[in-house]
Length: 602
Image (cartoon, rainbow, N blue to C red):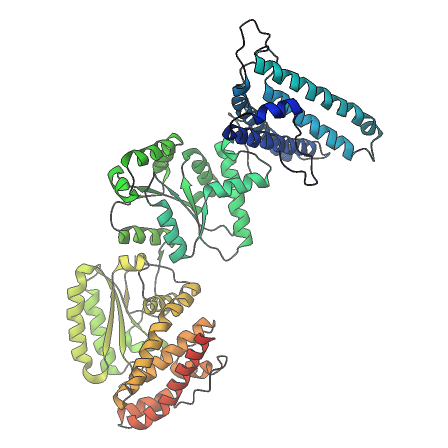
C-alpha cells in the first residue's frame, strides 16, 4: 500500500491475508494493490467531503454539490471493491454447497478495515481537544486487531473451501437519473471554443493542431479538462456523472483557463465522443461553442491510418458505443474531410475567424491626392470594374494614395481588386486599358484576390495590411454592399511583420549588392518598408516615409539614418540626379543591414 506522507495512514493488511495475496500472480497482485490503494484514497476523500457537508450555515446549492460528490465517491468505492473481489476470487478453494456462506466478501471486509483505519487516525487527531475521542482510541485499536484476526480466519477458510463467499456484484445505482440545476455561465473572457468530433482517423487531432499553429488557439483534450475539473471538485470518476454534470465541469475548467489567460481568444477541445455531454455544453455556452464534425468514409480513414481495417473498425465500435457518431446531428459545421488539405484548412480558418460584414467608406479618386489625368483614368477603371459586379466585389487603391503621400513620377499605383476567379480576364483587360491611360505617370501594380481566398485567410502580409487599412476607414473606390472580409487584428499584423521582414531584408541586401543609380527608387522603398516592419515588431505604428525613417532612428542600437526627405529623393530621381541621391541613401542601407545582422547574432 501507499507510504505515509503526513495525511491519513496507509491501509495495513492483516498478516494472514497479506501472505495469501502475495501468492497471487504478479499481474493480479498489481491489480489488487492498485484497487485497494485507490479504495483507501476514495474513502479518505469521502470522509473529508462528509465533514464539509456538515459545516454550519452551508447554503442549499453547496449541500447539493457535496451530495453529488458523495454519491460519486460512493460509486467509485463500490466499483473498486468489486474490482478487488474479482482478483481475490482466485484465492477461493473448492467449496461444497453445504459449506457455510459468509455474510460479506473479502473486499467488503477490507473496505471496513479502510474506514476503521481512517476512524482511528481522525480520532487520534482530535484527542487534544476531545476527551471522548481520547477514551475511544484504545477501543478502536482493539476493533482493528479483532478485524485483522477475523480477516485472517476468513481468508484461511476461503482458501480451504471451508466457507463460501457471496457474489461480489453490488448493483449500486448512483446518479443514474441525476438532475442538476446549474447556474453555470460562460466567463466573459471565454469568447470562442471549437469542439472537434468524428470517428477514428477522421482528422480531429490534425485539425486542432492546425488551428493551434496557424490561428493561435489553445488546444485541449476533453478528457484532460474533465479529469482536472473532477480532481478540483474531489470527484473520483467524472465519466460516471450525468451528461449535465460533465458539461458543468468542462465549462468550469474552460472558464478558469480563460480568466487566467486573458489574451487567449480561441480554444479547441477534442475528442467529442459523447453526444449527450456535448449537447449539454452547447446549451450552457450557446454560439460560443462551435461543434465541428469531421465526416470521412471508412475506406479513406483506413487508408490514412496505415493499419488494418479491423483495427479502425474496433476503434469505431468503442467510440460509437459512447455516441460519437451521433455528434454529427449536433454539429454546427459538418465537414467532409475526404478531400484536399487546402479545402479542409479553408473551412477551419473560416470557422476559427468568422468573416464579418463590412461597409467601407467609398471615395472618388479625386479625393486621394492624385493628379487630374491619373484620377480621371482611375475613375474610368473603377466604373469599368464595377460593371462586372457582382463578380467584382471590391476595388481600392492601397499604399501611398490612402496615406496622402502619392507623388507623380515616383509612387506606384497599388490596386487591390477582390473578384471571383471567373472575372480574372475582365479585370486584366480593364487593367491594360488603365495602364495605357496613365502611361508614364505611374506604374500600376495589381493584387487580385478571390473572396474565398480572403475568407479562408490565405493572405500575404501586405494583403493583410491592406485589409487592415480598410478596417481603419481608408476609402475604397467600390465595394459590394454584401461584402464580407476577415477581421485583421493588430496581433495578426504584428505576426505578418515577423513573416514579411526576412524577405524584405533579403531583397534589400540583393539590391544593395547590385546598387546602381537606376535602383535608387527600389532601394529607398525597401529601406522604408524594412523600417516600417521593424517598428511594427516593436509595437510602433507609423505612416509616411519621412516619419517612418525618423522614428526608426530610435530603435535600440540603430545608427542615425541621415537621409534626404522623400520629396528631395523623388526630385533627384525625376531630374537626373540619381547618382548623388544614391550616394546619400547607401550609407543608411548599409547601417540598417549591419545593425540587423548584429541583432540576429546576439
